[in-house]
Length: 198
Image (cartoon, rainbow, N blue to C red; front, side, top):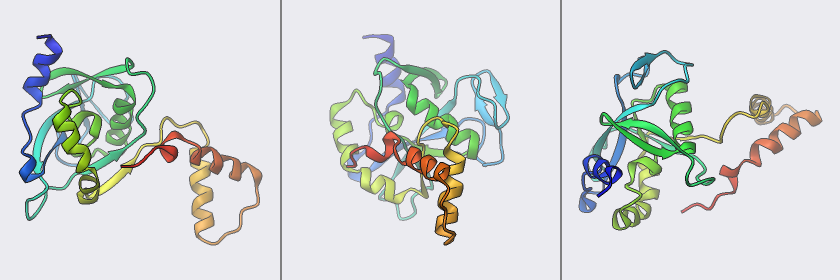
């Protein structure tokens, strides 16, 4: 058994499928949005991007009358399967896809969410049966989340103009500036908008 397998066994306690149990990430070091993000070995204020993200894994049941709040994070999988970044889960070093780490970092630094669900980390990706059961529950996982946070990827410099243009369009203000349309096109060309949904 490899050290990664031992770490997986320690982290991924079995889920109870009858109770529709899922794992959520709890940001280590704080339960409130106003607290700083905990990074392994140091505490950093919002905006700091150095160090490993640190979380605890917690089980919650979707069958409970009152489901504890959590936010689901949606992002685009893909890219190099070997491109991984270390986080700290329950005090243990654990490697996750770099895109998943980037999504978690962006969400935590921007909003300081205390409880998150992100499939790449909350589902044991090496356990085929669990993965199959959890994928079948994804619609319910997303629908029972307090909110679904979408991470489109690293900012390309045109995200803010695109969002401003969309807001103006929604307010009924006609926009005829080509630069705005180019930024909107660029925003909606990101991989998240083209992925297949379960």
